[in-house]
Image (cartoon, rainbow, N blue to C red; front, side):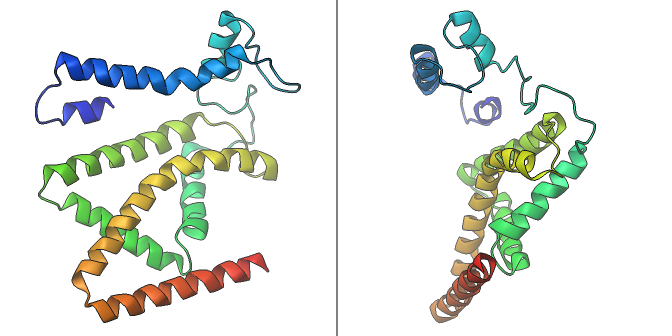
Length: 206
């Protein structure tokens, strides 16, 4: 959010500060459900009081962005976790063959950063900054061992956010490829990619 505000063409007026501030507060309102509803059995955190709610909201039992309340000697380093994420993204998010999906996403990223329009370039920079910040900070603080199946699945849920940025780049890459290929070639490439993806999913299911 601060980065987006910095790249605006002109400063926001008081009116828009109030509008965006109200939208931010509205986005937090679903958390009031934790305070108003009775805690369920086996759920963690005491949300029956404001003190317990604030403690739960700030994750003080676990630690901000930490997934376990206890230090674990088996956890990986930030570089190892980031490497695991990249491997996971290529294996599950890019479709077979992974190198093709990664190439399309790279083409999309290059297209966004080479755009002359500020309306494209500024969001591209913001997305890249968000991706790098998330991967570095989260993988520095997350403390579940990825070598064990259950903790790994818990950790994997938090890879959805960076996946969204990669999907934006992939979509931009698809648009770029479509713009430079004749229609019949584009349809051939699209059908070939979809058939490879579908057959790959069938093989994974069996």
